[in-house]
Length: 103
Image 1 (cartoon, rainbow, N blue to C red):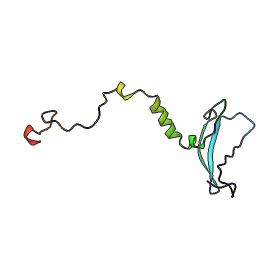
Image 2 (image 1 turned 180 degrees about the vertical axis):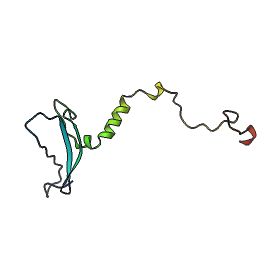
Image 3 (image 1 turned 90 degrees about the vertical axis):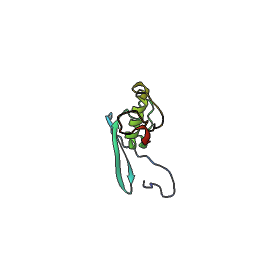
Image 4 (image 1 turned 45 degrees about the horizontal axis):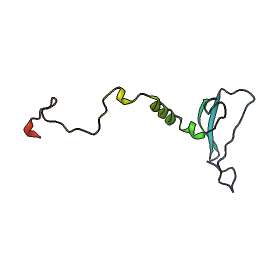
């Protein structure tokens, strides 16, 4: 990110508003004199009452969405028996051409 103040190490956030109720918010950052846009989110994305604007929430939105999708999904144990480790092939089980003397 570019430094807006040469003698300070601070992060800056520039916010541009219009005199109307927004439907969406577009988020980006200034990178070497160029604006790099990260994405556009609904106006309630950061909250309604006391919104907290986080560039990272938009920048890594796909990761955050995947986290919440996994967090809200049902446990794997609802669909399958969960077991640990890998079992070596057991002679005499399955359809292999191995016989008891070949292991």
